[in-house]
Amino acid sequence: MSRFIDQCQLRIRDLIIFTEPEFSETPSLLRMAITARFKDIPILHNHDGKTFDYRISRVRYLIKNNTIHLVTFAEDGIEIAEKLFQETDILQTPGQKYRVTGTEIVDRTEPVGIFPWKAFYYRSLSPWLALNEKNHENFRMISTDSERKEFLENIWRANFLSFAKGIGIEMQQWIEGNITEMEWRQIRIGGYSLTGFLIRGVANFLLPEGLGLGKNVTKGFGLFDR
Image 1 (cartoon, rainbow, N blue to C red):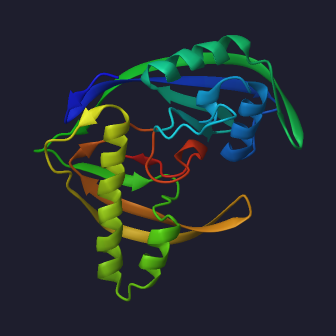
Image 2 (image 1 turned 120 degrees about the vertical axis):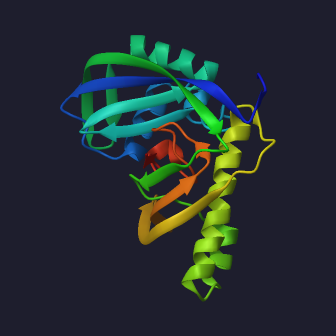
């Protein structure tokens, strides 16, 4: 993988899939349907049946206005979108079969990384799942709102850093970021209850739309707009 200092230009591909009927289910069920249809493509589910791929997930499973969007990046993600574009015909969830009526590919190249003299304002489009099992317990022990906000700000900056490292950016400057507004949300995924947050914040790190931060980004969580 190429290495970059502080920022790079990231190639992103949005594979849009139109179905009959329209896809009105969750991104989790979409991911299940895609990975069942293409079991031999490890990048779609981050494992090859034997080992888990701990690199950053290069596919995002999104639903926009009942239309499927698979957002991919990095060279292997771009190539997989091309294969799915050509071969997707039927998608099956536990309760519904969807016939693919059309596909479309939209390519874009966007800057990503630190821009030290700029401020980018972010607003949650979906709950940000910031907490893992360990730091969830630490978060519960915090007694004041200001300390909770500071705790989450550290995680938010760390999420930007993890994304940067995952796409080959070496950071030589500090990532700065603050959360200005925060609301709690309880989320259920696979029978488990998780704490999510809807936030507004500002950072000197530019993140392209549709990629997300935090846990379960592949299923549409942690999305922001600017």
